[in-house]
Length: 281
Ligand code: SAM
Image 1 (cartoon, protein in one colour):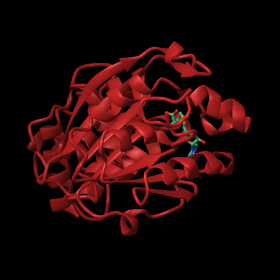
Image 2: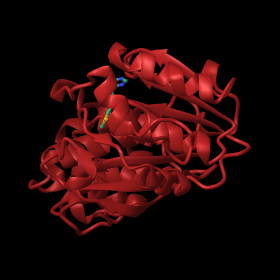
Image 3: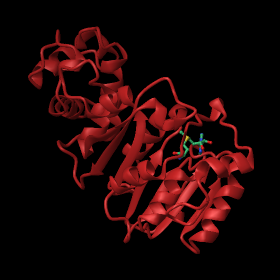
């Protein structure tokens, strides 16, 4: 029996290839093509876009992206056992699927993609946050991507979209929202995956802005935010002490009380602080 896309059902594909899930690779597969189509559609009209997918696994999301009309998909997969499966998908969509057998953390993909580029992925949880931070902090802005449609653990998704004053607000919220708009567009229960993970997942859609919300030097902002949230229970005058001997006065010069904690400082406040520290250097 074949599926809506004319390829065999994913359960059968996995069984035929003996693809048992490896925990070390964060392998929790989505086998329902209706669900993967819904995720792919969150990325909008893909017909004029190249799509980067990290971790295609047996290709549930890859098939959806191609079936939904992506101009081209570049799929980066670390597990060589998935290659024959992905190669069959590539044959089914001639010239539209390029597969790289590589560790996504160790390669550069920009040369393989033609703008506009959208990233869509059910990320391996062990590398998801690291990849997101890299995509948000490239050497030059705008980055190679227009939007990121990514699956995370629900708690990580909440951190990405969190606002000041909430427990989830932190480094991920600021690095994301400073130069992009982010929203949670879907929640996905553990039972949707094979094998089911312990946690609920959520899809976040992030669209880049051409300009940052408030001016700041990215390297300095990143350092201030890392220091502030590295010791989030401490007052800023203590957690940011390593950045300047005059940190108390600098905080006051931008209207932030030195006794305040990082989780109550807006992105505007952090950017003002980064500018003040830059002026000091
Ligand atoms: N996209 C598939 C799906 O939705 O069913 C699989 C998702 S699974 C959560 C994550 C995938 O990422 C696995 O196929 C795994 O082998 C792959 N992976 C893990 N670490 C990786 C890395 N560093 N680089 C590229 N792929 C990786």
